[in-house]
Image 1 (cartoon, rainbow, N blue to C red):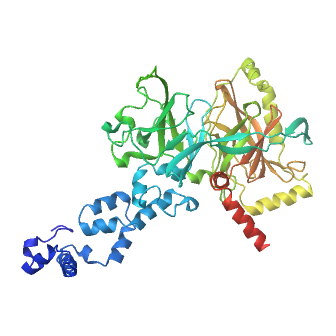
Image 2 (spheres, rainbow, N blue to C red; image 1 turned 60 degrees about the vertical axis):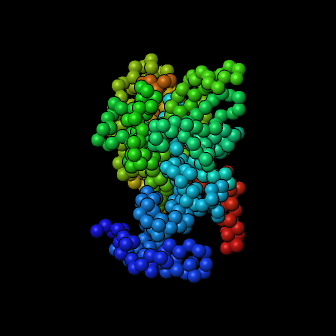
Image 3 (cartoon, one colour; image 1 turned 90 degrees about the vertical axis):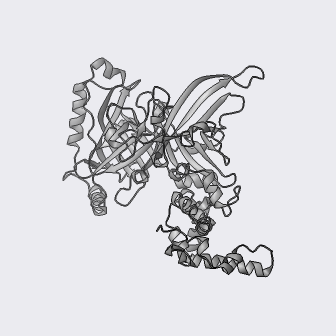
Length: 526
């Protein structure tokens, strides 16, 4: 006998059967109905239903939404328990930050309805940061659930340089250092993605897992349209270096999806065919322009493009005591403007591909010295190693750094947004060893006094990512929130500032409430 199989009503006593069907509306009838329901429960063969409702509620708290729906289909009693709004509110909490969690499910009538409204798209605000595979440049998006309107939106992350101050570097008089204080913000005027509260897929004949959600994005009158649709992870055993995948292989430990398709990702192989196949780390956006004449309802659809978006594992950009330099950074790339980077720490540096030697003419095009001169630069870097000639200040700082125990392993920086020379998804610099093996010196000069300087390799290329090379450079570890890279052949220094995503989201959507509370708590404790 099944767990939820009931005994037939024919086995009940005749008087109990009459009580079940009394419907005269009197108090006696209501009492009789309650007794009959209790009798029906007592007659169940399913021992689960004989448990107290409080214990059943605790059991249901551990079930995923799909199991709750299946359970609700078994009988009326479990349907009532599975529809408890507290269960669905708890299912929503991992997807919405506590500061944004709505005190009521508005504009939905219940938390269950709110969950259903954006199912299965809740993974988008849960992951927050998303990066696109658009050629060369790419984009970074911050996803956010708006509790006022009940919609999921994604805004482009931007950075602007503010006026800088130039100083000569005392360590190398020929190098001019330009200060870098970027202004990082979200472009709120035009969201990249917008999933409204009442989602209606416009291609419902294909099924909800293949349907695309039409989005109202773009400025009025620009005739631009966009849609959102789900992606399907490529099994790891099918991945091939020749495939175009996203996210790129430079970002480790991530599921990957196809980034190119001859049919613009319309075939069923690119879309999930069941719930378990829905990628929780990737999705796609389709953009096109549509023009019509007069009052015509249909128009000409041109310029269709599909972008694939992927999130990043928080373990790769969350700073810890052992990996204090991990994070999302914004870097100063001179004429290319500000670009966003993913800085990771690992125990071993990645194996970089061997490049074909570039001839002297092409090296001159990207501003590199002849091969022999670069070898001399590399030898100079090798000679700059800590020895007995260190000053007392350097020895003290070095001893303090050794005591911290955090200077070991490699640092890798991957571009999340790129430029015509080095595109998104490529390394911008790699420091193979930030420990004793890669240490050059402890800086004593302004503005890097006390910073650890280690050997690194900077990635450069001609326009169009042609003839790329890794050149000798120095990584200056100013602080866990600020890095600098000295491009030795160019005589140029770039700065990189950490982006605090929590603070950025708090300032943008909550008016800086979290920071104000922290400041008030600090003033009270002071």
